[in-house]
Each structure stands twice: as structure tokens, then as C-alpha cells.
View (cartoon, rainbow, N blue to C red):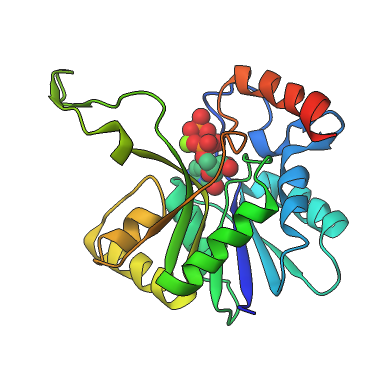
Length: 230
Ligand code: CTP
Ligand code: MG
């Protein structure tokens, strides 16, 4: 089976959540969001390494959480994140071991299902790059900077990108090198691979895999933990 490294970006400030503590270190029903997220991935076959990117202040906290969650045969490491998510991933990518696949998963998506992660890994083993996504439920408008609609793409062709995003390591490294050369910044990792002209496959996940972003999302998360997960 393909060997794997998992990168968890957790170095954001959580400005939209408006809490003292960054989102991955908030506690939901007695468990930090980071711990809950990491736990999902631990049964994944041939997982060799976990790298969490945090701000300097939270690196020790991330190490403690990894200590509690990671089995002995999975190496854990905390790296310092950057100003943009892409910089945080880059710092972590530099530390990855010699693995076949690199998985990137937001610390703040604790409700991803292992079966969906596995499906995404299988797809990436075939195409080189795959991500979880869901069909757009709203009609999407492409607008200009005056908010005038320029295009209404067919809704059935529009998907919302989630994580994990999974890549052959060699391909992701090349994509990050090219982005640095071109000073390209994307809002996800797949977009860096797409601009190399490589095929990126979207694997259908589900709506539970939401990114905890706003205060309302925390209430939804507690509802999920209390009513659905157990
Ligand atoms: N992230 C990161 N490094 C950054 C920015 C974000 O590692 N410089 C991480 C966040 O910690 C989070 C994930 O990327 O786990 C998704 O980002 P987002 O939901 O936007 O989190 P924040 O950037 O923290 O929140 P906000 O945009 O509201 O400030
Ligand atoms: Mg952000």
C-alpha cells in the first residue's frame, strides 16, 4: 500500500471565529478540534508521519496532542506556519519523509470520514492528485470587482473543494516549486497542481466535512457530536 505523510495546517489566527485561542486548539465537548481531527486519520493504512503547522506559541500544544493520539509507528512533528496557509504547507512539505502520498487536511475539519479519506487516497494513487468535494447546492455567480455578474456556470459543473487533498509527493513538491518561482498564491493545494496542467480528480465526500470557520459552525459541531457521531 502507498506510504503516506499527513500535513495538518493549524497555524491560522481564526479571525472569523473571533476567539482568544486559534480554532484547532478550541475544545469541543472535552476534546480539542485538532485532537478530534487527528484521531480520524490514525487507522489509515501505511501512515508514516504527521506534520502539524502551528504558530510558535502553539507548537508545544500540538506536540502534546500528537503524543496522546499518534501510535508508536507514526512519527509526529510540529513546524512553524507562515503568514498564508500556502506558506504553512510549504514549511511542512519540506519536512516530509520519503513517502508515496502526501495528504493535506485542515485542522478544522474534524468530521471527515475515514472511508472518504481512503477513497481520496485511492484516486490520488491513480491520477496523482485528488481532493474531496461536494456538489454546489447554490447556483454560483462569477462577478467582477463591481459585483456585476459575468457568468453563471452550470450548477452541475460546480463543486465545493474540501480537504483532504492528496498528491503523489513528487507532484506536490514540483507544484510548490513552480508556485514559488511564479509567485502564485492559491486558496488550496490542488490549484497549484492544476496550473501544471496535471489532472486533479474530485472525489465526492459529504456535507459533514465542513470547515469550522464562524461561531455558528461551533454550535453545529456540538450538535453533530451530541446527536450524530455517537
Ligand atoms: N492555516 C494555516 N496557516 C495560515 C492560515 C491558515 O495553517 N497562515 C490553517 C488554519 O489553521 C486552518 C486551515 O488552514 O486549520 C484553514 O484555514 P481557515 O479556516 O481560513 O483558518 P484561519 O485562517 O485560522 O481563519 P480565518 O481565515 O478566519 O482567519
Ligand atoms: Mg484563513
